[in-house]
Amino acid sequence: MASDVTRRAFLGAAGAAAAALAAGVTAGAAGAEEGAGAAKAVKILGISASPRKGKTTAAAVTIALEAAKGVGPNIETQLIELAGLGIGVYDPGNEAATQGGFKDLIPVLADAKVGGLILGSPVYFGNMSSLCKAFLDHCMVLRRQDFALRNKVAGVVAVGSARNGGQELVIASIQATLMSHEMILVGDGQPTAHRGATLWNQKDDIAQDEFGVATAKNLGRRVAEVALGAAGGSR
Image 1: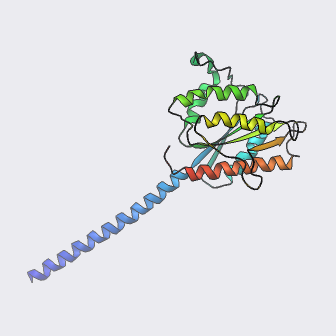
Image 2: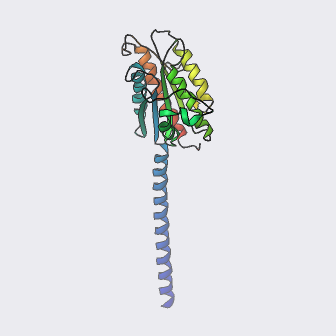
Image 3: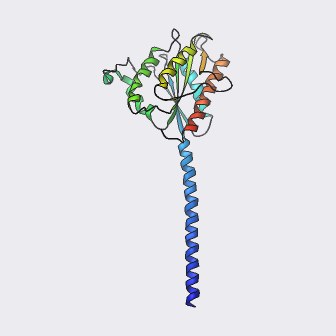
């Protein structure tokens, strides 16, 4: 009799342990799935470096951000217009005095949740705007903060006043700086698959430039796809 009781107690204890183990495994798997889903959530920042707020450069970057958002539910986007932020000439010998409105952007850009950056500039005399150059120069601060932009994905949008108005020169110039931050540079992806988004501003309107709009959409999608793919890795 005592042997039967001992046997039943042993089997009961073993069953309880197995159930607890199964529950633990299920909970662990669920937690892992949840964690994996959280790890893939990324934010794509759009930066319009035009001194003309709300104009064609901002519109082009917005098109790219909308396309990025369509890649998946884990993509968040934010447009930042540099116009009016008071970002002056960068002085490496006196950073505190020259940062101006850039100070507020430092934690936004360095946020670990940010997986991608889409930087847009108008074309001025075959190169980026002075505001875009000032912004990039100020990003030296982020390079000194343990390369805070490292492994974030970057795409570039350029808006010119002609079809071949220097857009690719602007893109290459901006990319050269972003490469110094160890960012992951991407072009506008298939089917156009060039250096980046190149748009033609026709009397303050880019909507008529079907090819240019397509490159902006392709760029946004490409940035989001690569950022999602890199989200699980460590910085």
